[in-house]
Image (tube, rainbow, N blue to C red; front, side, top):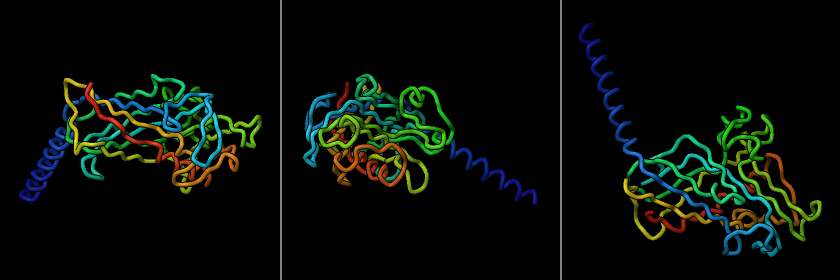
Length: 254
């Protein structure tokens, strides 16, 4: 009996030691990764109140565009992350250039993909209003019952049936069948892999192409839908579209 207890204790200590070693190895040293989100339309930098034509052939102007970014990760082979930023939510606002630059501290590991999520986890949606990027004053929170808006696009179009030809898309939803949080995986452009370094900041320039908001996974004409501000099947279709907005264009050392 004593021998059995000693063996159990030995294996427990060994397992704990290996676990700690793995955790220490996984954490590594922290180096800076900078994500530079650049909203665009019709192949040029997005400007508010400038007229664009979406892929469906409709004219439109943008007055507001915001989305949440979370769970920034670096991958080598799916689905295992080599470095991850589990905590932290970032609100990217096209009206605020400073918000389009996100810096996080991650491991130095060879990687060949960037992964992040657009939207807010369900647990935060049922925890009421938060602070910081999740503060309701940012205009991205409905109610405790409906939760957070994951992405927002507002503007006008001559084809909109909304008041004064405006359109309003507030996309959220976290319950089963209504989830609009999306995971984005972007391969590195023109290189097999990359490594974060101590002496440099790695900057990734990410194009956010609004053309695909209206046509990518689904065709969502302004003339058919001029307003959507609640969870449901239509919001899910918009989420499937905004999952396609992102392209990793450039990776450089600063």
